[in-house]
Length: 314
Image 1 (cartoon, rainbow, N blue to C red):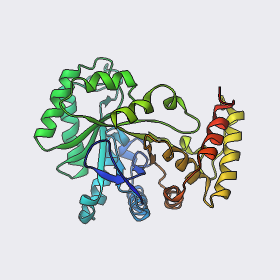
Image 2: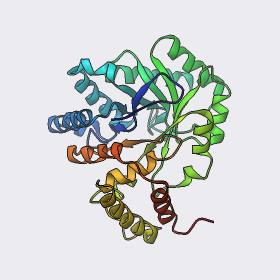
Image 3: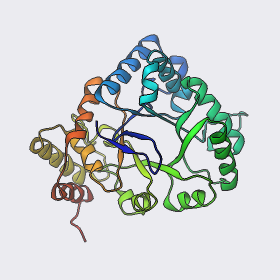
Image 4: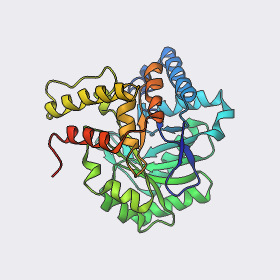
């Protein structure tokens, strides 16, 4: 699989990432079975064999169980650690913690960032996280406090590079203005059914600041993937039906599958969008990897963009 640098960092990794949100098969760690763990390991093996070398986590995925399962898998493949980039996220807190009346919220306090990092390191079974991201913007964020936490983690050798997720351009600029290091990524939802990043300044900022955009849900939760369908109550059903039809047409033209076509469309953008593939089906993982070989033309890129917009360019 072709590679690219993450932002301005020395971290070179594949143009597509493998997302580990679903490997525990749910959100309740108490319900994870041995069969679930074996299936997760099979999915991770498939991702590795398909060429994926960037693995994306978050501490909240199945309340840490996804990291734990990955850590067990990695323990059996220690020779792979230096060949991968391992990313995770922090900052989301579930309701009921630490007191019963506490609401679900976001927390970028120094204490929580440091505590979360320690937990992820332990579950993943590693000494250093390659890429550590703030998961969703904390309205009470104090940029100087975050900067202090990041500086501590880097000086302690626990984190190599930092990024954010789901941040607006103004929020990226605010945090970046106080940090002693550069932000390397902004992980946001980008796909043919979610075009906001192309016009709200997010991708423009990534190019300007040389940040890598990581695209979560790059096939719209399966809607745009091979075998996926558009729900009857989709608010933009007509445009999405036309988009799926065109994806199938172009997949045939480029001798690939619909999933790969949708991912290749993202990777064609000059910002260097890195799609995060989240399927746990080995066959689907291999289908997604084919996107690395698709070079979509400017004309076909715009055909899909216009179809997804549901109207011609202004």
